Image (cartoon, rainbow, N blue to C red):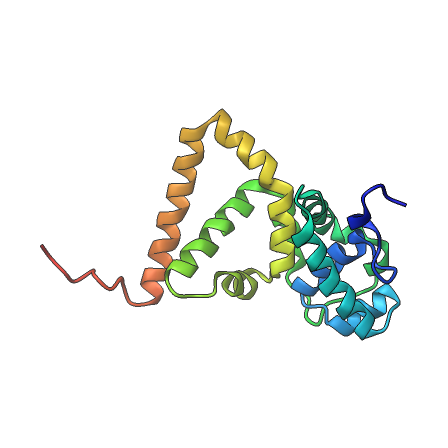
Amino acid sequence: MSQNPLLEPIHGISLEDYSAACAKLANGLTEDGVATALGVELPVWQEASLLWTERMKQDETFHVVTLFGQYFGQADQHPKFSNAAPVAAGNQGYTEQIKTDKHFYQELEIARTVAYEYGLDGAQWIADKYGIALGDFQVAASKWNTQIHADMQADFQGYTQRQDAWREKYKQLFADAQGGNVADDITF
């Protein structure tokens, strides 16, 4: 039993279970698949999911949210989901690369942002082009976040130059795909 009542399981579903389930949902596992993996009926999962969300809102220390992020990033290691497969699996090579190659992750993070700027669903663009589901992208984000902040502090100029180069690359790519930018033919 935990000293913090906000960390107590809900209907037998721990915060670790809930976090892994959310990651799996983001990767295409259905709610029925989540309930089956957790060994509960669908309405039990749905109520526990709502109650975990409420607990996170109640937690003024952000301890529950912090643990949620940590467990979300470790979802692939959760034993209850070892045999739970999403509806459509992505490209395993790129999915592994985003978790092991920080620069690949950072480049796709920029690509996703620029896609949104060009009116596209950036997460869907990454899923379509690389087969990386949103959940796997977020797992990589939680893995690389601390290292990226350390890199920024160690070499801000180098970090910024890489970010700017990727941003220009994807601005050009999306502009070309749309037949140019809206203001390309305006001269002052």
